[in-house]
Length: 403
Image 1: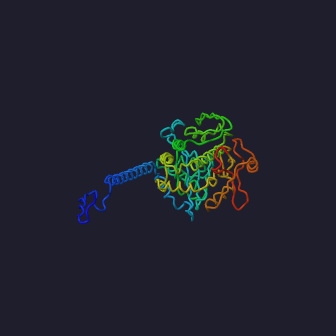
Image 2 (image 1 turned 120 degrees about the vertical axis):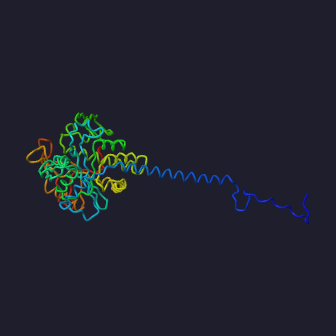
Image 3 (image 1 turned 90 degrees about the vertical axis):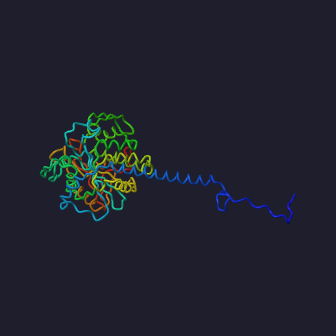
């Protein structure tokens, strides 16, 4: 039955909160949006807090060497002037100290330490290449008068290179390197045995290849022949071993260290470590705990900027070589520079000019060495070929240890 035309329509029901003009049709949706916004805010705050905690923790891991910085300031006038370009020179020092957790097994702690490994790392101004030059620990050099830990001073002397670190620590080593090369050291890092092992473990080990099995009691190393992945303790033994691998020379050990570091760089760059937070954090945690640096590299931001610069360099442009050297004429167990090759290398780095590094070959070694000494060290050493870009024998990070 229909309403008649003259019958007034029934009034609309009174408006309620849920049916008022402009109000949401369903109240639970509005409540859900509120809770979602609150939850997102909490997650963001927690993430920010965790990120800040991680940052503070990593930043706090780094040890700053203010003593070396203060000592170097005393000799500012005698140091090489800073380069005109944005190139950087970083001195990497591997300390053989027996102090600290896990280090005493490598020998008695006599209160002194020497630089078991020293590498001068040159980063080009355009960040297009990195050249790492190993300085032999047995190289005969002039060590300047340095301040010892007890406040007394040493006299200037002509002695083997790693005595500088034992006598006057990092500052004395830096001044010795600068006097030898004419290159100003902008920053430095010192790492000990324990720090090296943790770095290798953080990237799940590094692959190496051995032609023969190794059993070296001094280096605490026993390995089968063949391709294998070395972790902390084994990796340390591999780069420290001298008497049981190859001809027993320190030169060959430096070459093996360069191979291993190249493989380590290659793995970090190719394994997605730098782009994966779950992989990157353990590496950063190990790295920041492992190193002692100057004030210019003692923050996570400083190290991140350095890592970012290294990440941009292709692995084939990360080069390793040993400074041109030969057996010292008065003692076959010591080294001396080969000139003019060494001076030419230092000049190229000083002026931030290209250095070409090519692989070792038997033919080249015979042409450049002229034989070997009683200790297995070449009687001559790498000499640059006459070209626009000096060439030295060495390797790059793309080759790896198993190349």
